[in-house]
Image 1: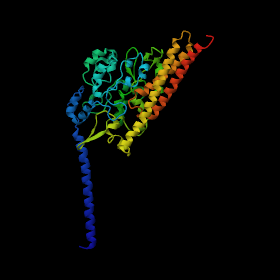
Image 2 (image 1 turned 180 degrees about the horizontal axis):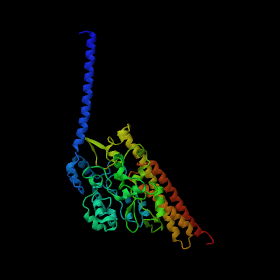
Image 3 (image 1 turned 45 degrees about the vertical axis):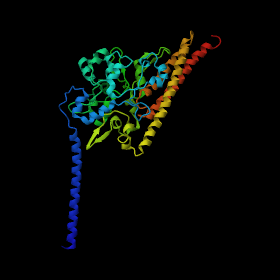
Amino acid sequence: MSPARVRSTTILLLAGLVLVAVALAGWSLWTMRNLESRAVPISTQIATDETDPAVFGRYYPLEYDSYRENSQISRGPSKYGGSEPYDRLAEYPYMKTLWKGYSFEKGYNEDRGHVYSLEDVKSTPRSPTQAVCLTCKSADVPGLIRKYGEKYYSMPFAQLSAEATHPIGCSDCHDPRTMELRITRPAFREAMARRGVDVDRATRREMRTYVCAQCHVEYYFQPGTSKLTFPWDKGFDPEEEYAYYQDLGFHDWVHPGAGTPLLKAQHPDFEVFQGSVHQAAGLACADCHMPYRREGNVKVTSHWWTSPLRHLDGTCTVCHTEDAELLKQRVFYTQDRVKDLLDRAGRALAAAIEAIQRATALPDADAEPIRKARDLHRQAQWYWDWCSAENSTGFHNPQKIMATLGKAIDLAHQARAAALAAVHAEASPGR
């Protein structure tokens, strides 16, 4: 065989080997994906109204195993938060002054995991009286809302809590037949519709945040009906939610010492996340709090809703190339500074309340500075509470949280100054 022919034959053989290698690689990739998809088959055996997570676990055992990890109780890798139900009132004693006259004064423990949601709301010292307080605590709630309609919200808590048997579970976020993500709480759907957003047309990436936003949000109960409502008509920022409540003339309670009509913020995690650097990068709640993990050849979404610091190899280091310990310390760097601002704002508010109480106790105090002090107190405490109730100690959006706490501190000092002006005017000669 001539040299030219040998070279030609060699080239053809090499080309053939390359084609075979490419085909094998493609087959391997297809096989892996096929194995992954077939490892978690979609079951059509689960009833459309099933709410028991254990039933889902028969068909999705890997996901269910991770779901059961929510029963672990510890502070975990976080300096703040965790699932150990420590007494936050003891750790932050100024909260008792701020919430005097409100149910949170009776008890405020760090939340345990989602699997304890129903058990904990039934045993809370805050003693809920209406079924609306059950709304985000049980997978049985959507069925109760269908059964009773909007009367559900104002019905007795004791009656409907007896009808709820399962905590937060699979059916809260998944259609039992298709396992597609879905919205099960009317308040979120209605609030987004008022903003012109059809959640039924949401992308899967959007839904990986939306299912969390059914509950991890600020809300209030409409006077008269107690219907659960999200105050998003003007926007998601604390200033916009405050303006919403101002237009509504709404307050949760009147502080018995200061006489201020106050708002109690809930856990506005969804609102805080809006405009954050991670949201702008295209991340969803589930990317950090429900990371993928591999079980053999299967890629599984973890259903252990926990701190991203617990699984840095599946959360932060997926995007960040820095050392995992360095990333963890950067989180603490942010949270330590937010914690300091939270405490500064809380102490400033306690001082403002004390000054307002002194002013109102005077028989002939000037009403105008007291009214001004109360207006400033109401706004300052809203900004502090909005940041305090959020679950990441600021890390969901450090810039927004720190700016909001700066406003809280400034307004609290203004409130105290206004109250002291009334005190000093009363004490001045000639009065």
